[in-house]
Structure formats: structure tokens, C-alpha cells
Image (cartoon, rainbow, N blue to C red; front, top):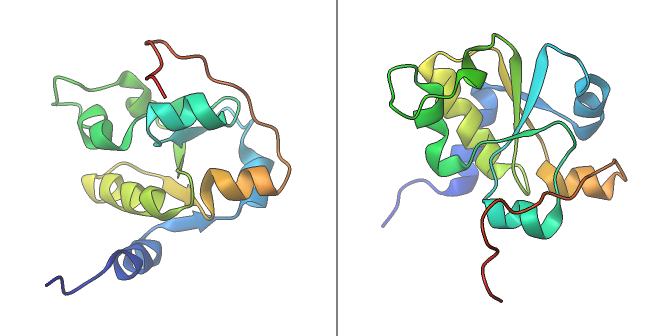
Length: 137
């Protein structure tokens, strides 16, 4: 039996990292020193769209892309920008931001409510084209 659930893990993460509202993210999203990072699965992007200007970094590869000693390192994460992570509902992004914060990436934050809250607020989105064939329904 588990001793701590996902809600507790996310609450702990939010004590350690900055949590931003969708309104706060909207206010800074075009700042050249800020990079929004969408950690959702690529199929979620294809299906639901994304926030314009955001970079996709799938949750499963995030730590590998951040680590400069990893063979999968992405230079984007060495830019010195502030990284604001988001997912569909704000839980995966809290854990992701905490993980990369613990690795030493700074500054980082996550967006409360995720992409769902962004869409609900009526903020702009864009379609993302599949770079690989879409899975069959």
C-alpha cells in the first residue's frame, strides 16, 4: 500500500516551487526571458492544441533534456530563461517543476490548473501539427 498519494506529492511540490495563475502566465508569456514548457504527451498537443510560443518537452524525457551531461540534453534548457511548466491540469507540471528545480534548474515555476485552466480563461491557443503520423483512433 502506498503511504503518500499524488495530491500530497503535488501539495509538497507546490511548497517548494513557484505556482503561477493563468493570468500571471498570460502577463509574462511574451517576455523574451520566459519560456513556457508544455510537458503533456504529444498526442495531447495534437488533439487539444497548445499555448503559442511554448516549447514541448514530454514529461518522460524532461530530466534527460535538462541535464547537460545527458546524451539527450537540449540546449534550450541552458538558456538562463525562466521556465514555466504546464500540463493538462497542473499536477504533472508541479512534479516536473519540482524535479528540475531539485536538479538545479532555476528559475522555474508551474501553471496552476494547466492547459485546461488556460482554455477555460479564454486565452489563445494554437494547433500543433503532428511531426509523426497520428495514432489511429
